[in-house]
Image 1 (cartoon, helix red, strand yellow):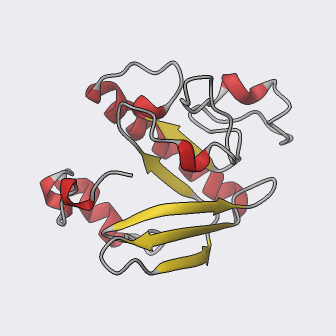
Image 2 (tube, helix red, strand yellow):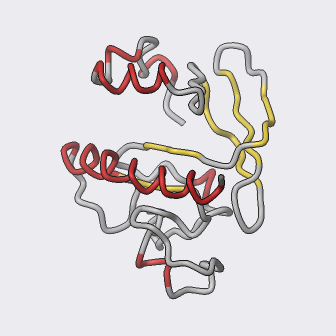
Length: 156
């Protein structure tokens, strides 16, 4: 994982104001600062997650059904390789890449950017066959939001 000193403590340093307002307004989003995901659990879908506070080293296990994760240009994906399908270089496979594999066990096709673990999405540089550019990652992330809403609606 990246050193916590490389991540801004304030969202405004790295995120548009309208996104910050949407996060703040949502009762379905919880933001955990100075935190890294250290474990994902569930079968066949995400059920629990463990995260570690970088300042206190305290680990927390919680029931979690959805995770939106953005990682950098080098696939720092080792912590999910036992959970989701990756290619030979460690990039996370999504959408059509997982649709017709033994990894996808759902009655529906995966949404674009959805990994082999239903309700878990990957966008940007960590995704296999993505265009490794910031603008592309931003675009994928913004498009992915609609599919997250669809998955959330499926669960209601």
